[in-house]
Image (cartoon, rainbow, N blue to C red; front, side, top):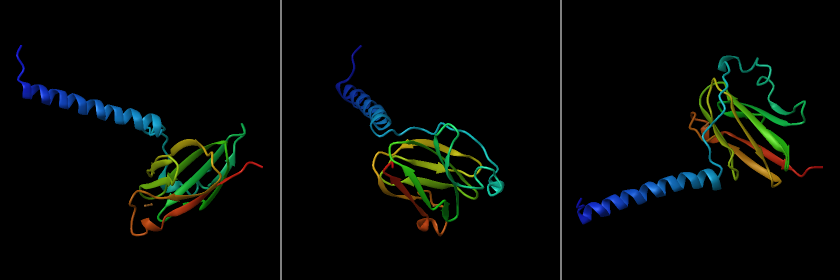
Length: 158
Ligand code: CUA
């Protein structure tokens, strides 16, 4: 079969683009640990304040020694507003919203998730560098969106 030379250029061009896009996906998944959300857990967003876990947000040491950070978000604040975790220890974040969709991003790390009312967002991280990190909301949630921030302090293990 005879394929016109210009047709060949287009076919090769499209093929190269597809390879680039797939490569970009694999690269971001591998090099930057960017993954789709994988945790599905529901919660009644109107009863967050009375919820046994989310009604009392903070850093919790589990029976097995694991660290959990429970966070509730509403317009326009994070609770708790200051989180302290040790360096080099895996920490599981569990986050929910009692009003609208917010974002939860720890700047200078790859911790970044949407927080949707009715759902619990969860991810685990180990922080390697001690210091102060800014936490921001990165989903526009209303007039006070730009004021939403909290602080993560990664402490050198004692
Ligand atoms: Cu909460 Cu923007």
